[in-house]
Image (tube, rainbow, N blue to C red; front, side, top):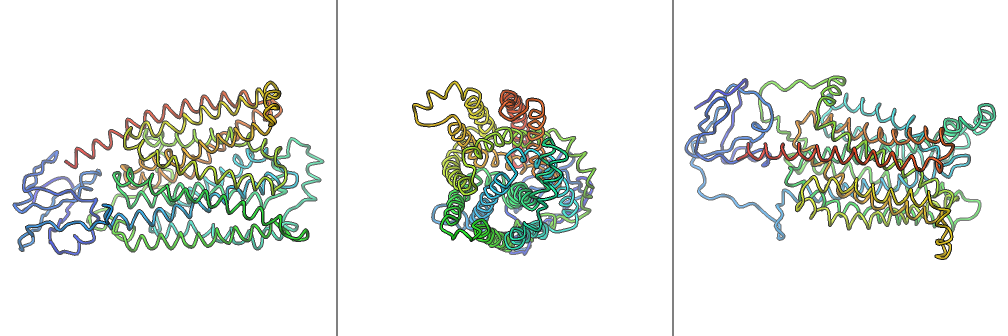
Length: 573
């Protein structure tokens, strides 16, 4: 029994005890009743016993010449084998994915928070440095590094398996963060050319302070770049690519917000960890390098958790049939689609409205967070000039962010299920618009508010610090709970190559591109207006324009995403 369709031959075996049935992912199948399936070209009769056909065949632009349905001579079982479930109704197969993924996300965000807080303390409070170096770093150092990584990643994705690619990307972080604490930082006196940079500053003048400071504290700047890459590479690219690889859209909408609950508890514990090491420095003898002790402790934790993350990844690959060890293409014979080269990939991605809208979301977030973040950190250093005070505040800030994110995770699950993808995705830019507007107003009208704030026992500077902290807490909690979840759900219906390379281009390049774009805007405004404070009104205007573009792209993407889901739902039925 056979039927002609398009260009290729596939055999679908219906053995009740066959090896293929045991190892093929359940999500690739739709049950077929003993009736004809109507395609756009032909009618395919399955037979009288019913069977299963891979739904993947109808969800991707594959081409076939015929489908051979090979019946097992043994009669089908009259009863359906019940699915094994836990007491609270979750399938064991699902548990084997969701619990390890939640634990992996916990470890990744724990490291991310420690690295984020540490990089700011190192760069902002270093001798001769300030928050004004951050826009320069993000534009002229972070962005080229991210582009270079994306190029290497795209090349390696064509050569390595997904598991090997994951470990290859994790290895540089493990090596660097261990080496920084135990080798680079103890030798900063030798590695940092203090005398040379002092002479350069005297000759070139303060206009070249940015590049001179990068050279002056180059090992700290390298740490800053690697910490930024951890957020874009490990959090945005490696983790979510792996999660999307082994979950369906239904599982994602149910569990992405929920397993993020446990992961974002990491923000609370990592904030407490940073605060613990900040307080530890106070108890050391005056001759002991407190920062050196703290860095060795925190980076040891980071390296150990990196190894644990790799172990979890290996466990999931071994224990889940939808992982890299059993990819769907192993069971579809015929000619594989030729993978695109680097420039072909970029041209293809740029031609896709769906990918462009996704890129707009990520770039808009990067610009928006940077416009407020650098201004806030300049106020933060003015209020807390010493590394110990700055680090303590950042530890408390991370703890509060973790608590807020935990609450938002609970809310996000309800929002996505009840109101849909579009409403959930629009909440984050709305929060940016409101809280960012209030933050810039607190700076613009600081002199007018000074008498009133004095009666409350606070200064305008401290008020700006707390308002900026509130903006960051609310915006980042919305980002972790809603923005990231909605963004990752948007990748799932895409073709595999578009998903892999589009995600690499968007998450690894567009995110730092957004931050670099915001940083470049700040650099131009500082040169024009003279300082960050004087450029505040224009920063507020740029924030408004950026958020409007963000909301427009969200509406467009909501329509396209909903259309894709309806398309696949209709095919499945």
